[in-house]
Length: 337
Ligand code: KG4
Ligand code: ZN
Image (tube, rainbow, N blue to C red):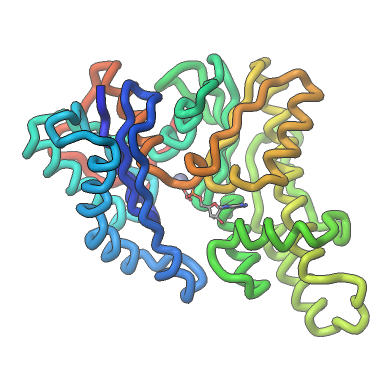
C-alpha cells in the first residue's frame, strides 16, 4: 500500500511516499529557512504563501522520485494539527482535492503522532510498549506508547517548547534562525559547566517541562555579560551556548529516565527536530545504556518535519479502517493521548 504523506504545519512544505508503513520511496522537504531567517522566526503569513507556491511541485517531485504515477497511490495522509492554521490549510485543501479527484481515501493525521511514528521508518523499529520523547520547535512531550494509535501523555511543556527555547536564545545571541543547529555548533567550542543555569524540574513527580525560566536566566546573564565583558573575560558566547544546551538536555534526559521508571518499559524513542542534537542523542544513549534500556533515535532527516512520518501514521490509521471525509479541517491545538 503506497501512501502519500503531506505536512505543511509550519515552515517546511513536505511530501513523501511510503510503502506499507515502513519502506521509504521518496521524501521531499522544501525548507523556507531563507525566507524566515531575516525575521528571526517563522512569519505565519509568509509560510502560508510559500506553501501555496510549493505544494504542487513538491508533491510532483515526491511522486517522480518514488518512481510511481498518481494511479499507484492508495491513500493520501495529511497533517491536520497542531500547527499554524493558515499553513495547515494549504496541505489539507490540497489533500482533499487530491483525494476527491483520484478517488482515494483521505487520512487526517496528528503531527505529534507523526513524530512518534517516524521511528518506524528506521531499519530496526522499537518493540511496544515504549516511552517517546518528542522534542521540537512547537512541542516537548513524553508519551507512553502501547501500540499504534494507543498513546498516553505523561508530560508536556507548560510554556516554551525546547526547540522554541533554542530558537529564542539563538536570536538573543544574534546567531540566526533556526537556533538549534547554530547553538549546537557553537556549543562544541564552549564549556557546558561554565555557567550554572537553572534546571526546572517542577514538582517532584511531574514529568512536565518549563523552559521559560531558563530562557529568562540566559537573557539576564547575557545582558549583564555583554555590558561587563571586562569582568567576565573568561566566559565566551560559546560557553553561554554550551551551558544553555546542557541545562535543556539535563532536564530532557532526567524526565525521560523518570518516565521509564514510572512505566517499566524497556525501550525509549527520541524524535522531533531537537532530537537532531548530538549532545542530546549522546547523553540519552549513555544514560539509557547504563539503565539497560534500548534507545531508538530517529535519523536526522526524520527528526525535523517531513511527510514520511505522516504517511506512516496514515498507513496505521488506514489499517484500523479509519478515514476522513471532505469536511476535514485544521486544528491549531490538537492534543494526542
Ligand atoms: O520538528 P521540527 O522540524 O518542527 C516542529 O514540529 O516544531 O523542529 C524544529 C525545531 C526548531 O526549533 C529547531 O531549532 C530545532 O528543531 N532543531 C534543533 C536542532 N536542529 C533543529 N534543536 C537543537 N539542536 C539541533 N541540532
Ligand atoms: Zn514537527
